[in-house]
Length: 178
Ligand code: IMP
Ligand code: MG
Image (cartoon, rainbow, N blue to C red; front, side, top):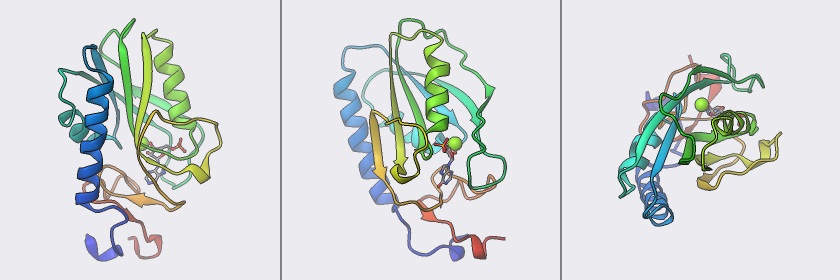
């Protein structure tokens, strides 16, 4: 699988360190609070799993399965919820965790969707941020890395639902993808 990529954009070690730091920061920020973390599938599955284990609090977890892309590398602009939360989040401290903010459309949509369920406080956390590509004015409360305007795969992020299991993050070379 590695043969189609150049050097990793973010190595396993860099990701591991940053996730640990984020976990430490979230632990401090939510000390004494009852935190419910929502993972956005499929893209956040690795990040969410590692992040929850870097937080030294008895968090509760839930998932939303959402989709915004067809099979392309550009957002369709239409986000669909395939599977919704199983927990009642009314009045709760909630942290929504996704893989990446690109245009911002997905995060914006999911924030509004979750806010309709009346959480006490909602914050967002993303591993990656492609600031250059924003179409909706939105920022995450916690960001792992800001990255350049390149299509990346690995550590949960996909191209046509492949390469999610690459253990680091690499820029996809679409020319050699097959
Ligand atoms: P947005 O709605 O344009 O912000 O896109 C957010 C979603 O698009 C993310 O949750 C990803 O699933 C996907 N996405 C955006 N950029 C990339 C990328 O570089 N690689 C893989 N998926 C991406
Ligand atoms: Mg995604």
